[in-house]
Structures are given as C-alpha cells and as structure tokens.
Amino acid sequence: MIYLTRKAEFSASHYYHNPNFTPEENHRIFGKCNNPNGHGHNYTLEVTVKGEVDSRSGFVVDLKQLKETMHFEVLDALDHRFLNKEVPEFRTLIPTTENLAISIWQRLKPKLKTAQLHRVRVYETADLFVDFYGEDSQDSE
Image 1 (cartoon, helix red, strand yellow):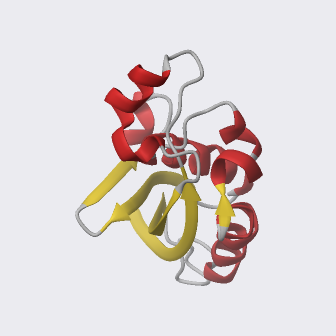
Image 2 (cartoon, rainbow, N blue to C red):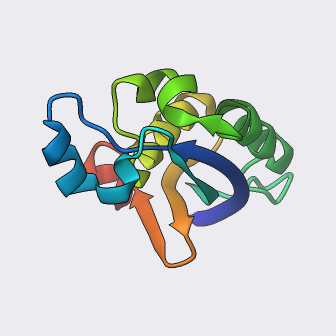
C-alpha cells in the first residue's frame, strides 16, 4: 500500500458562534474568536490518498486529477471566503478546524476514483492542525 500526500494552501475567515448559547457563553467558550466580524487564517491542507501502484503508470493516482479535484472541490469553494456566510455547510456548523477537515473529507471522498482517501490534515496555524481519517474506523487502519 502506497500513501501519497498533496499539499495546498488557502486563506479564509470565520468566527465561532453557537446561536444556542447566550452571548456570555459564546464569549466564555470562544473568546475573541466569537467576534462577528471574523478573523482569518492562511490554512495549509494536506490530502493523503492510498492505493496500489499502477504497474503501467507507476502512480497510485493521477496527480493532475488529484490536484484539479482539490482545487475544484476545496480551494475554489473555500479560498478567500468568509466561511460562516459564503460556504453552505458553515451557515449552520461552527467552522472550527475540526469541522473544516470533516467538510473537506466529505467534499473529496466521492470524487476520488482510483485511490482511496486516507487522511485530510488541515493546519490552522504552523503549530495547530487536525487530522481526519473518515467517519468509520476502517479508514484509519
């Protein structure tokens, strides 16, 4: 089994807010990240796929196709967006890095045909990242 990772970067803004919380709870839990004007990050995305090496091409996945899929499904949808207001799933879901990784997984998984999605890693900052291996535990084995 071969694991191949492609990296990309995008910038987006967001804020953390739960409409079911009181203003005091939102401030206590989310602090300055609860500012409705938002704040931004330069995210780094790593998408890891796994599979067998094709004996004819020597590849586990068509690299151009993977890059195009990442651009169309993720970067075009998220780059330079205010996540809470411009990305449909985040109108009702708090755009934490955890939820962002899950959302990216859900965008990519059905589009990958030859290799299997193994991991989505999203860096919010250089020293903070989230790994998501899919909804069921078999994806992480």
